[in-house]
Length: 317
Ligand code: CP
Image (cartoon, rainbow, N blue to C red; front, side, top):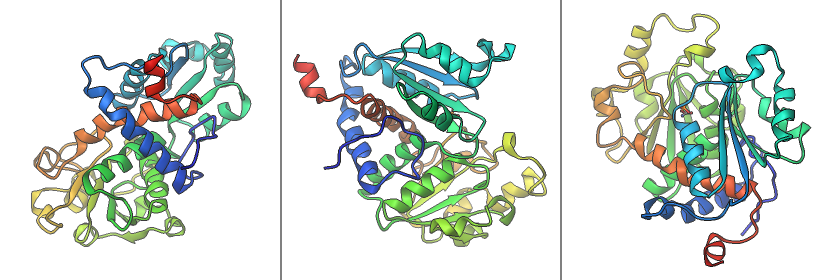
């Protein structure tokens, strides 16, 4: 089994198949902790984690906070409107000051692609976890997605996975494409041409512009939200038109495989990319994704912290 040697988790693009599998196996060992009456292990006792969010978040921020607490770390939540960033302090100066407070791990979400990499490169003594940077990567989302697929389907290798929607602006799509293809899935991206990057086929995915054709043979259908906050111009006629062409509803789902699973990273725009009937229906694993985020983020925190002992050894001390 491979060992973890990285100080940071910045994206899935550079991770090997073995590193991806190590994270998923480590997550598996953490899953049962959240089912215990006392949901806490002493794995990160004495470590300080900063949850630093420059963009809105419900799932990722909360999931990292709960994960850190379940590992017995001290965690501080900071969001940009409450920091001196609004007084003009730069990102690097902000982090420089935080590190003077002897922080061990910085989790960062930022609208600029590359912000986590910049911090990781400048500050060698702190571990950096990317919680979503611009339209670049959202590695822990993709890891919890891979974990959920493996949990529901037994494997990722050989599965047909359709990722549907705004591929162009989606960091979730990018991280998932790297992770899914590296673990051996056949990935098809489905959406209007204007929302699919021109060079996407270089990543080894197939492109399909028709939703019914794109989902017909899929074992997994992964729906994406339109990233309105990142759209710089009108790339499709209207939301109503988009929903008509690319929205997943009960009628469309009849053309999919009988054992298909439906995924979505959240937040959902009901009635746009997915109907309530599908989001809340029997094929949906959307809330399982959220639950699995805990085990996956506990695993990532544990690995980047470089803990040398197993959780069992730490509990016996
Ligand atoms: N999936 C995801 O990143 O959700 P949040 O924006 O709520 O964190």
